[in-house]
Length: 293
Image (cartoon, rainbow, N blue to C red):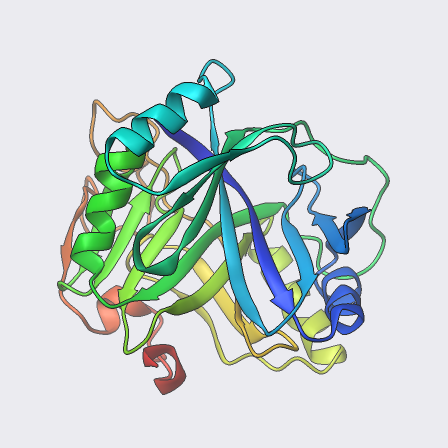
């Protein structure tokens, strides 16, 4: 079984109307479906990017896609044969006919399904309007063990480590789709959306400022992954990243990331980075304390 891409993320929120207003009017991620008390929102390149349900603020599940040729019945058999708790669900969202639910490591709930077709082509007219959901990061108690699950069970590849406490994992060409960071408690660390580029990041900064969402970190350029980034907080206090220029592994046989002018290593291969400013932000602003919680 090989995961090919990220699907969507499921959030519980205590104020669903406030969250809808934020995602539509600030982030520019459009409501495309409503069903069974849930609200489904999508970026232009996603079928669904975010699913909102009412509840205490938390990330409840992550959806990952497998190829259309992959039989979900075989996926379920493979997971249960490995002693994992998994089940099949015939319907979870509009446009998603079938999926496998599996208890991942460290209380991470994972939905495995086939990549769905894009949603509505109706234009979103306000907000930032990122391209797509890009990646998600989790605080975990044991990043080595959690990494082993994603590599051994879902065929993720390790792109980089920061020290022995922060793993960056890929399932396609993007440098990372999953981040696993050692923390004091299990929770989502941040969720990230891809923008069109540096000009779009600048536009996003102005939109966030105008709408009362100050940056909590950035603009900067991460060393690991080399993406330009900005971070702010959602109304539920979750860390939201917008990024551009993320490293790409275009050819697994070559084993290095697509060359970029800002790379210090030429070629840039997966490695273990020493913790510090070179790994976290090559433009110099150190990691805020709240990111270490």
